[in-house]
Image (cartoon, rainbow, N blue to C red; front, side):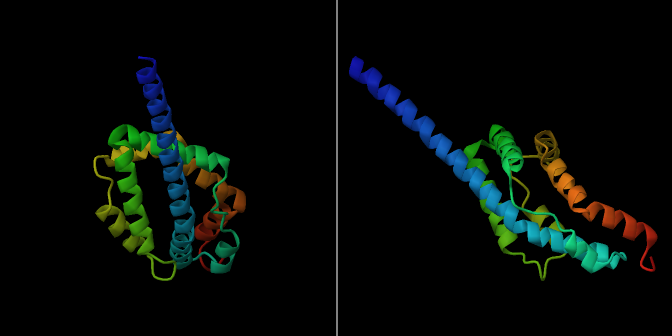
Length: 169
């Protein structure tokens, strides 16, 4: 009887440890996807705002850092947990696989807003509604962190001031 109890405890401890490793692996993957997609997304923004009259050099100079810090990791883990509550950890792995595929197919030289929209429509997360995705992102503060970095780097001010005054300045 003691042996069965001991084996059960060992199994639970090992299972818990493997789930933690899986969660850490998912967070690492999510971080890598986010950081690698940052350049693509920023280049798309630069092209779009430049076409509206903002100075391309000013925009490039104000690109915020895309590397994750502890706040991003907390928000990222929050998001993964929110998705896992809906689609399970294996569903999160599938989601990360799709995200990797989406951003592997884009590069900062050829990506456009239209190509991003098309890919996001094709690669919606199975089993998670758009409303649920928006709620998870909002509740975890991920967008707010990105917006804060854009404000701190001066990108938001450049966009607002140059777009409002137009190309002639």
